Length: 185
Image (cartoon, one colour):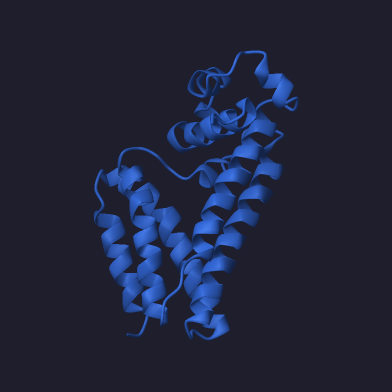
C-alpha cells in the first residue's frame, strides 16, 4: 500500500535534509521525490518549509530513538559494540555525502532557528537517554552511563562530518576504537 502524500513528503524531506542540509533543501526536490503535486505543499504544511522540516526532524529523530531503544547487551562493552554496529551504516552513508537530518536543522536560517534547535536538542537528549538506559541495564553506573552515552552520540554526529571530509571511514574506525578502549571487557 502506498504511503499517504503527507508521509511521502516528510520522508522526502528527511532524505533532502540528509543530502543537502536545511539551506539546500527545496520544495521542488521534496515534491519530485515524493510524487506530490505542487498544491500539496500548503495543503499539508500550511506553515511552509519550517513546518515540513519540523515534521521531518521529529520523524527521523523518533526512528533513531526507536532503534536505540532496542540496544542491549550482557555488559557495557556489548552495548557499545551494538551501538557502533548500528552507527556503521549511517557513517558509511556519510562517506557518500549523507549526513544527519537532526544535525542539519541546527544550522539556523532565520526565524525558525530557535524552534529547530530546540527540536534537535530534545532529540539528541532522547538518543543519549536511550543509550544511557541500555548501558545502565548492562551494569554501567548511572552517571558513567550518561557520560558514555553522550560520548557515543558525539562520536556518531562528529564522525559523520569527519568521514565526509576525509572520504573514508578511518576517522570513525579510530574514534570507535578509542570509545571501546574506555569500556572494560
